[in-house]
Image 1: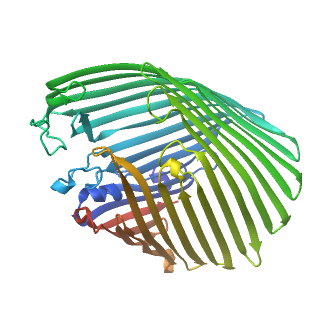
Image 2 (image 1 turned 120 degrees about the vertical axis):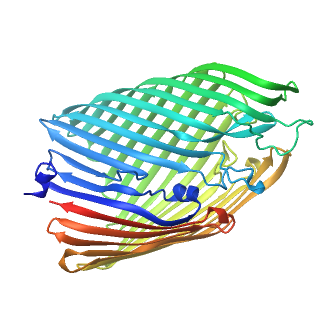
Image 3 (image 1 turned 135 degrees about the vertical axis):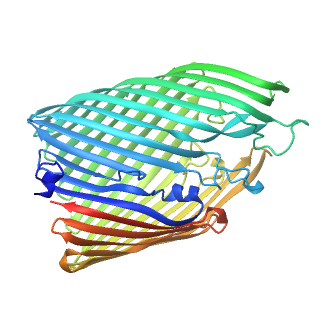
Length: 588
């Protein structure tokens, strides 16, 4: 009796990986382990592949409790093409040292913690036709979970629990028209949004303030704070590409939408609070705010490519993004634009030279002081150059250089005057042996009128790959460094200070895949990361996997991993874990 029939699936190319994982001797911070690794114990569907030709193709993996599970399927029936993509992702972040103003008092509580899951589903149908292809689609992106946030009040802030629940539905449909000279797509759709948050506590909470305020202790005893946001938006999209001549390509996109949003905010809290505007104390507060806004939004881009001869290509592109938000509280106007010219010259088949210029400009205006000193503006010129070079026998070398100068920037941390260099080389030394090198540099130095902000980044990497009928070997090494200096104002003291950040890191990945007798396979290797500087960290992950046939269509599999993480400045975030996996691989 055939294995595929036993599993109740049609006879087709098929593979199923089943396993059971358990952690042995997990020591240290469980919150840090979940924030970085988050692989739990129990049975798992590690992988699934099913292929019945064009009728149905499906893949899946990670089901049973892993932080990232997915399922994809596509097929065709009677000139109808269907595609389904579903992903289930867990996000956990509760590193004790982050967002924790009470760390120096020995309180290991992240005040911006999350334990949530997001589920994304995209379903697409396309109806057959050589020239005209109508289509319809539905997408849902939703998340829910719990976490920790702060209730901020005058003179103090209090870490409290919160729950989150949001969902966005995108329903759309349209038609594609294809000809030998180009194509046209027209689409109409709608977005529907629901976002709910609930912040609450019923226990005494003295907050982050360690001292009295005007001789009295500010305290929170009860809190119920709710956010309810609903929104909808109809949008229209058009995309077109045209080749009127063999030497000319034209393309463009246009999108218009007008979201409408309604907000219902309610707050009830008891304890002892202060109103700094009136300088009075209160034992309870009750608020309700209702707000609504509209945001007409237009996005468009166009591109033209001209090829006057076989050695020269000239392309011009223009992009614009414009919207304004009219609400019951404020008004925001935002315009962002970019124009770019690129020229590629190929003096010979093995060499291509590139050059170009990009001009970006933007402005934003509000009734309030979101942009200090008046309307926010950004102006930047960027010059670009590069090359592609193929050398015999099998060398490929790529290089890109960007040099930007800004007359205005929107925010203090925006890049102003910067130079960026990227080099990459790949060499096929033998038919089964290849080398690759990467190097990158970024230097940013904002002019004094923008405020002092310096950023320097360096990255260098090298890798080697060897392929053989009895096994493969690969190793890569990367080194990087970051230097950042930023002047800022300390809110509590209203004086200038400097934020200095340093980071120097090394990472190594090495794996060896060996084909053993009787179709058995062995993989050994691992990853290692080490950094020094403002927040040094060490992370190591050696691992090994083995696959042994116990039947022509059944393989026994086993895996071992060791996780080790440490931070010299925050020893309480260290963890160690041995992880084992045993399973079966079923084939047809």
